Image (cartoon, rainbow, N blue to C red; front, side, top):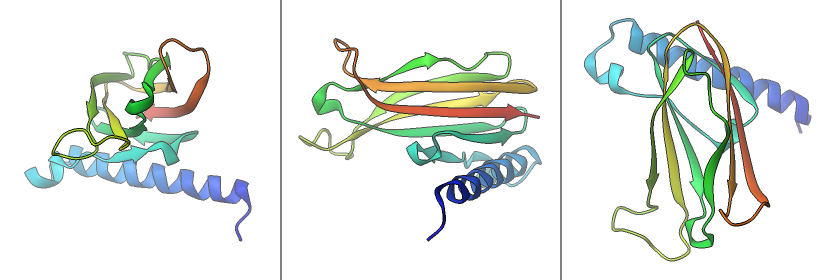
Length: 143
């Protein structure tokens, strides 16, 4: 069994490598199909650092418990000079509409705007409560 710190370090390296490689491929004039592939990360990447090339995009896909009225809220928006939030969409779990009890996904599309380091911090909670259900934190370095 791998110790927790080692798993985190390995996961961090994998996330940086995956995002960095996709971003570099997309920005290096690859085929149109390769350029449209946007790397996606999920809640398992929370706490990690990713690197993006200027102009590269990154999708953040987070499970959302809409049946309990839980939604994702910013606790810290990324610095717009480094990363812009292009869109935020709530996507149902199935293409046929809402299934009771099925989680949806909140999908953020981010775009690297300029060199620097910034952080995206989110919390999932019910709007009327102060109790946080889930947290997500991502540090983004744009080169």
